Image (cartoon, rainbow, N blue to C red; front, side, top):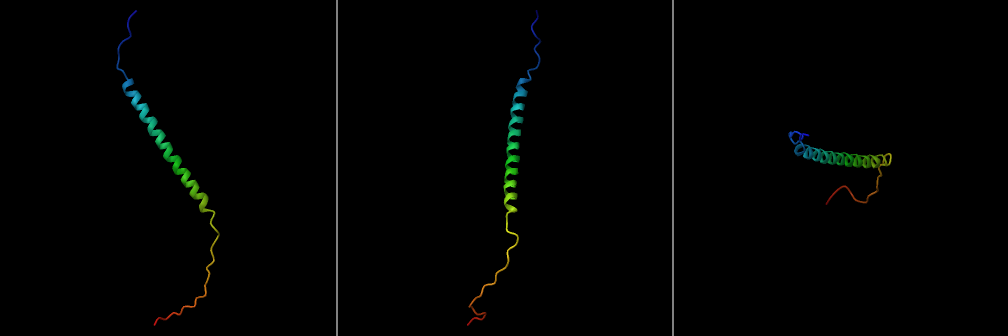
Length: 67
């Protein structure tokens, strides 16, 4: 029986690459999810305003002139 041939060890490159992609994907997914949640909350409250406020005129006792 012969020993297996010693080739280049790719584990030194694969492991950091997989970890980096996992971290990048997780952070990206978190940012997109937070953005969607905030937008959803803002849109939910944006449509709950009253239709249109009517202007109200208040009677005032002040005169327009000054001494």
